Length: 77
Image (cartoon, rainbow, N blue to C red; front, side, top):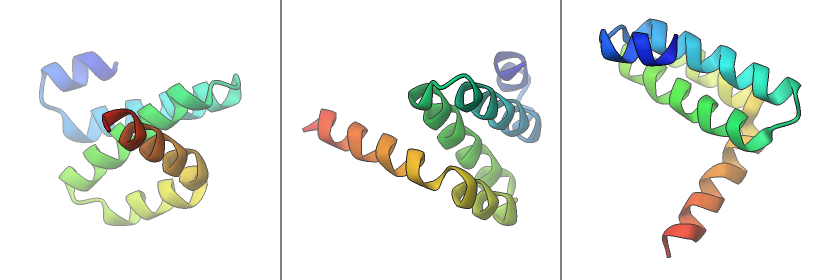
């Protein structure tokens, strides 16, 4: 669903698909993939202008999103 939405430029659908994937990965204990999909969802919601949804995602996934960003920045150095 994520790839199809991206290919067809359905930003809102891509955001939702990424968000649902993040919940799925979090549920099965895969925090790395959950964080990556959550960050993607956050970016797409922001692109779409759904700022309230961005806030909601950060409130729910905040700690794993922060860890993912910190890991990315550490690996980039």
